[in-house]
Amino acid sequence: MAEVLDGLLTFYSWHHALRAEKVLREGGFRVELIPAPRELSSNCGTALRLEHGRLDEALELLAARRVQVEAGHRFLPAAEAREPGPVGAGKPRRRWLVGA
Image 1 (cartoon, rainbow, N blue to C red):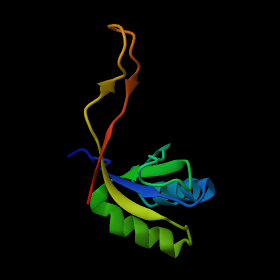
Image 2: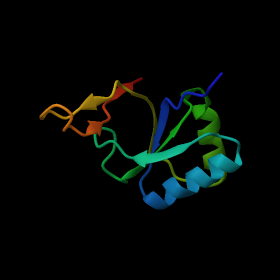
Image 3: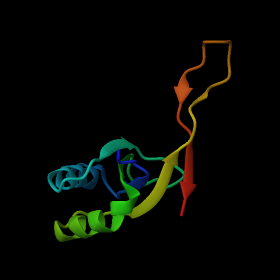
């Protein structure tokens, strides 16, 4: 079964986001750095997507390696939407659903 990256970690600084990516990849996690959604955090411009079911395991590993995390979230991409404009002129943009 394919992993769904439905979890998101936010950070206080980009340095910790980059360290978290490295630590989690070394720990066998599938992760993806993305721009941090402003509705979740205004601290750091970078967030890390991962499998929500492994969030507690990831947080324990990051704490053991002294990587500071602001918060963990369940974060699901919604259907792709297009910005309004003439047909075919809109740029794809991602909308998100934030859940508990």
